[in-house]
Amino acid sequence: MDYSRFLGIPMLLVIVIFFSSSIANEVIASNGSNSTSLELNTQHVISLKLAQQIATATQADCSEKGFPVTVSILNKDGIDILLARGDGTTGASVEVARDKAYAATGFQSPTSALEERAKTSSPGIIAVEGFTVLPGGLPIKVNDELIGGIGVSGAPSGKIDEACANAGLATIGTDIPSVNASDTTNAINNQLTNTTSQDANINNNNNTNNLV
Image (cartoon, rainbow, N blue to C red; front, side):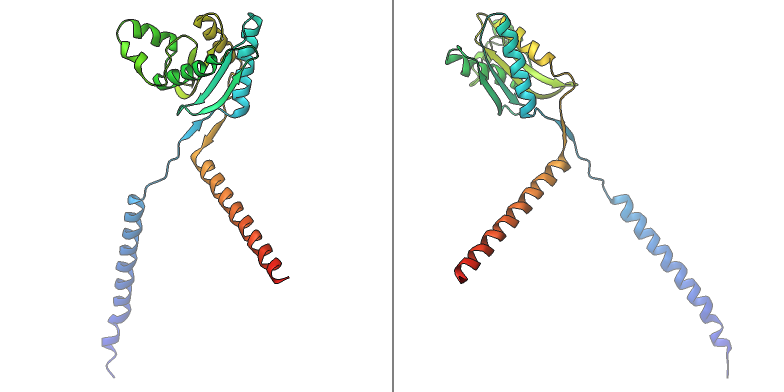
């Protein structure tokens, strides 16, 4: 029997295995280079507890000056977190306080500065719906990151309102909590899971009652 033709088979197998592994490595390297990592932003938020702390300190400062005030605190999107109306304040102070906070948040600027702009270069600011550009509104920021706004109304002057707002913000220091987008997603998923489980339990109870 002629065994010479079988001598080349091992070498051929080695060549095939070598090129196959090389191609696989190139595919893996290519996939790795094209993959993108998911980066989630961490955002600072004003919790209800923190908003209550700010509002309490703000009203306390104004009370020491002899003036009850209304305090409005919004998140960075201009949505209400807390509205605290002090005893003895007028009904008008509620809307004015919120509109000051809304303007400070929208323009990321103290409303006292907006008032000066309205007097000189930007009179159209006063025409923006929902904005009140009287002193007493301040943006709330953490390292230049806007997280919300505060508005105060009820003192005899806007300057006093603003001073009380500053006093309230001075008490929070670095107590601003942070939230990661992944944490928010997990919280939503957990809520959906809990809701689904509750619905399943209700359905099971209903089926059992029907059988009885």
